Image (tube, rainbow, N blue to C red; front, side, top):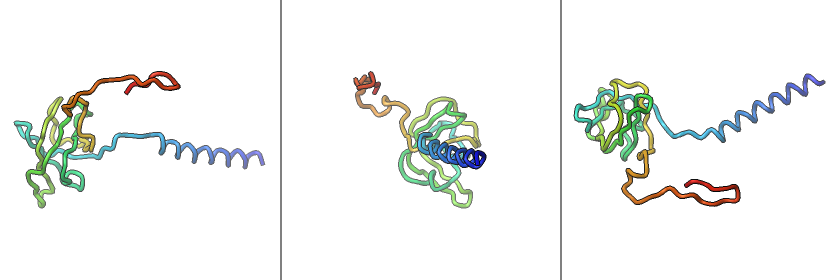
Length: 135
């Protein structure tokens, strides 16, 4: 009887832990991407085409374990037989990507800091019941 209760309690704890990790473990929304070519002038990047890299809009591309970042703009060309898409590089920082970089990440988080938006901002502290909260 004690063994059955212990097993049931263990299973309940396991299920609760799995659900807790799903709820609490928030991560940046990133998708793997493959850089096929990086232009010498750094104004264009060719990527493996997929439903993310062929979507219109601006995105972020990270590479070399986040040592480099680019803000990716409009689609310049697609090559269906090669399965690639060429996109504009709006801006980039850090080291140039090694190509092909199988560890690149595609993300909807476009800006890496508030400075890039070009609007005035400042760090503030908001008093709360539990103490000061940085914002």
